Amino acid sequence: MLLPDELTPEAEKFIKAIISELRDKDRLDKVDNTALYILANAANLYIQAHQKIKEEGMTFTSDRGNISISPYVTIARDQTKTILALLSEFGCTLRSRQKLKELDESVSDSPLAEFIKQAREED
Image 1 (cartoon, helix red, strand yellow):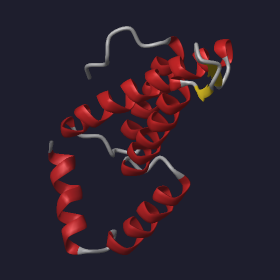
Image 2: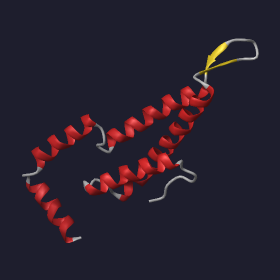
Image 3: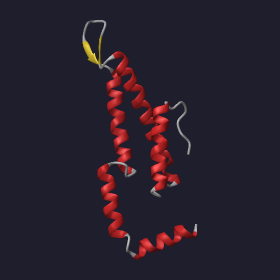
Image 4: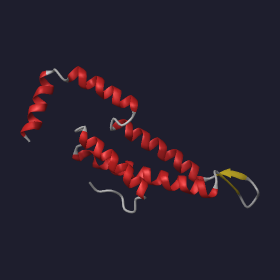
């Protein structure tokens, strides 16, 4: 899987943990690479923005003396939305895991589920 260049160590650790979890649960396919790339990039941007907020604060004073919200706050907020949406898509939030569990339980005895299971075992 191709990851964005220059990931922070925290973002790299995060995305590798997500990939490992998805592989362990057999919920990862090649078509997920783009979404995982976006997730890694969003996590990286969030971490970088959060570090800047810690260094510079949540607000800044303009040349005219006006206090404004740091653009890093907006970046962090936007990336949080992206991260949470993608984590939900991958079944990595409490709510989405519960939905997947319910779906697995309702489908596990179906003929289609048995067919798919056998096909995966043959690969």
